[in-house]
Structures are given as structure tokens and as C-alpha cells.
Image (cartoon, rainbow, N blue to C red; front, side, top):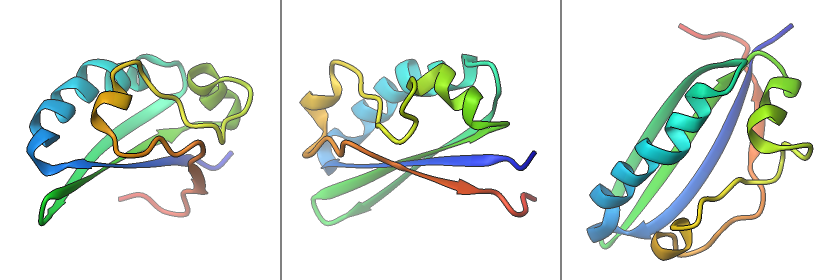
Length: 103
């Protein structure tokens, strides 16, 4: 069965990036890694002018494993209570990709 990459993006003010990354490591990243069937997590950041972009790419053995983290509708983004204090917009969905090759 092919591996699946779950890709989420968020945007916030650049001056809050360090605080948000710390928050994400303690919430979403830890929860992703602790979910059975998770095969790794990347937390990516990028700053341009006064905005910062954050992306989390998590790798999964199956859609069923993703449901253990995301619930029945795996395309629905999962947010934590404080996300709304950081993010400029809470995108309702995210995307999944079949991993064709991983180094």
C-alpha cells in the first residue's frame, strides 16, 4: 500500500512565528507523531515581509491511519483552540498526496 502525505498550510503575522512554531510542536506535531500509522512529520516555515507561512506535512501508512488523527473526513483540517489566536484564516480543508518516492 502506498504512503500518503497529508499537507496543511497556515498564514500568520511574522512576529508571532516563533511562538506559533513552539505551540505547534507541543500540540499538532506531537499528536501527529503519537498517532498509530504516522510515519513522520515535517514542520516548514517561510517568512516574506510581515507574513509567515507554516506547513505541516505528515506521512501515513493508510487513510485509515489518518482517520485516527483527523476523524472520518480526512480532508477536514484539524485545529487546536489557540490556532485562531495565531492564524489569519482557518482553512477548512487540506490536501493529501500519494508518495511516489521518498529519499
